[in-house]
Amino acid sequence: MFSRGKWGIHPETHKTATADRPIESMKLPEKVIIPIRQHIGAPCEPVVKKGDLVKTGQLIAVGNAAVSSNTHASVSGTVTEIAVKPHPICGEDMAIVIESDGADQWEENIPTNRDWQAMTNEEILSIIKNAGIVGMGGAAFPTYVKLNPPKDKQIDTLIINAAECEPFLTADHRVMLEYAQSVVSGIKIMKKILGVQNIIVGVEDNKMDAVKVMREAFGDLAQVIPMKTQYPQGAEKMIIKTLLQRSVSSGQLPMDVGVVVQNVGTAAAVADAVIKGIPLVERIVTVSGSMIKEPKNLKVRIGTSFADVIAACGGFEGTPGKVIMGGPMMGIAEYTVDVPVIKGTSGILAISVKEAKKMEESPCIHCGKCVSVCPMGLNPSMLSILAEKEIIDEARDEYNIVDCMECGCCSFVCPAKRHIVHHIKYTKKLLADKAAREKGATK
Image (cartoon, rainbow, N blue to C red):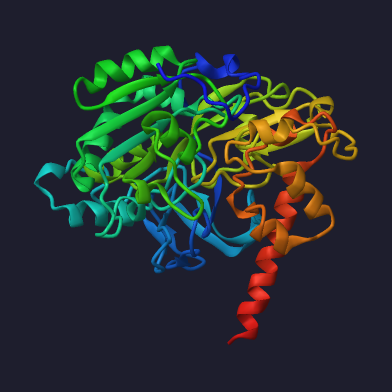
């Protein structure tokens, strides 16, 4: 078992409410709102129009850019709008609205049964791309891009990230317990594409039941390694360091150290796409928090509103103080429950007013606690001070603010209750705005 490093924190996990709750399939929503931006990269472009009849699994928006992702109808019915709608990350964005006919009539030849072992790597990659598969851990990076590294990158290891280190979230845990064979099939497919022999599945040691199931399912295919429970163990750079003792330096990607990292839920989605022809039209979502009446793990169609998902869990226990997409450390607070579930929605949390209360910050006391827990080896206290003064160039050039993954460890341990991550995010926004202005001036 791998031991804990010197970085990171160990917050209360809050997983008991849903860890033992089997996945339930949520009933079909009456309406879905499917954004054209659900992934890292360029948004996709609609290929349907208002009034069109669509089937479940039908392509409705195409990702034409080098880094993008196709989008498919998650229900059968009628396209009633293509308009700007609430978005859980962007605030608002263009989306395709489909009124369900309740029939859930699938596109022709879905599902199917393909012999993927007889296919070429190019054929398999094309299927994964066309199916709109993205990273299911939350980052939503297009999977076909990760599985097709440049020829000069020598990949020797595939890591399956099953850490699920964010508090409350248990979706990946349940996928391992209930969909083990799909995970195995997905990993076999990715192994063929990448041509690697070394496969490691990293699971935090608060999920030993999943470790047992995975080891039985994998046999000699992969090492299933329990890791000390520690946040943010599931970050790519952290899990690579823990499992392989390889460091991904500033400006590098995992492929620069010979590694591809994929989420365990992504592996199952790859299997569904390649073997059964099922595009990414639904995902497992953990619905939890003190203000949810019946916490659950739900299989939810993409585009279903948070309001409908919460209603499927009995609704709220009173008035929540905050609703969050994702986990409490890196999740995004929502301004409305009318936002839709997207491909990267791993969880929906509802917490109380007391839990959501924003602590009043005070000046930095230079205790160094934030430095000691930063997984990236940064100086968060100095970054927050520079951010307050809007000294953005120094924050970038001298203190490497762009390397911050915004995990929240610094804010978690700060005795002065400083809003360090907020300051860092604001500075990154200023730097992005400055870069855009400079790029525009050079055209």
